[in-house]
View 1 (cartoon, rainbow, N blue to C red):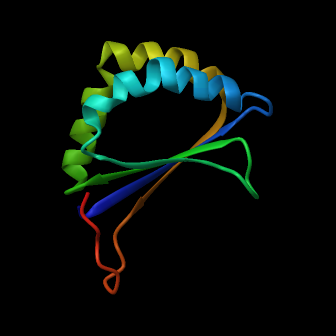
View 2 (cartoon, rainbow, N blue to C red):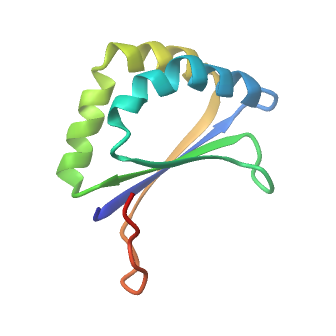
Length: 107
């Protein structure tokens, strides 16, 4: 994987439990078909709280854009997003490449 996408969703205070419920009931069922690109999900614990953070991996930016286009056209994902988005204050996306001195682990 040559490009990594870090997505951070900051939630309204007190909405993390609801966000977890929405992810468990709708989000993961919709997204698991794309799990070959999902490297990890995290929940903020110390410092920046009320956050869901996930990292995706792609061979290149064209494949990244193609996958997100496919996901945004997925009815199951739209159903999830309709429930999840009202819980979110901000969304931050970062594109990254691996540092050359660090080996990339395979799944």
